[in-house]
Length: 115
Length: 115
Image (cartoon, rainbow over all chains, first blue to last red; front, side, top):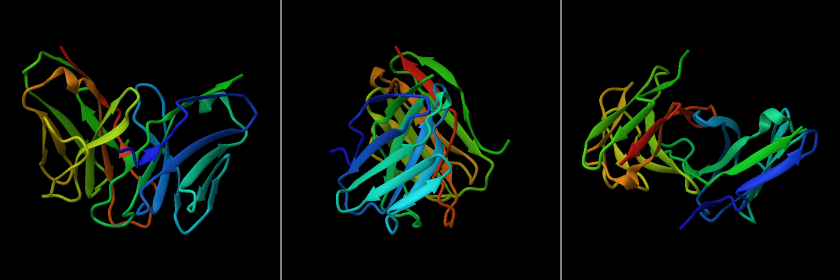
């Protein structure tokens, strides 16, 4: 049973346009959400996060939106750049500060930004 | 640079052979994790160690054992490798408790092929 779902395996956008990556979750105990970016042959790197007490968090070109009632979050990248081309993983946790903190990941979405 | 170091980067095993994947972090983090990444499956948690001296099973622990040797090191052992364990393995660490909201720091991965 997949608790974190990224239903789009891939997304292609033009440079300068907006990229929107979506993520759904089923576990209502999740209270902390993160996005990771992964280039080939490298480990994932943290991008941006959001706590369930917020509905939006912004960091430069990256904004994450959280809709708790719909159990849905999205990552917006504006404007998109070719260097943003990577696999993006959505992740969630139900214990952001506790000793049993661990992340559950989605399957990832491959973003391609075309020049 | 500070971070998570994994060795080896690549390994080919024959079915039935054993090996240990090594992971070390120099950030004084409390928690450490082992994930595997398979095509179309995202990142799945194998084992984790919330603190030195403790280990717990994750989502896919069968066929693996772990040792939290000290605060810095967390190893993953395959006692009798099987082709189904062909994967890319990532080690990660996190400081706990923390007010930072940046999730894990990942190593660059070990690509394991079992023939």
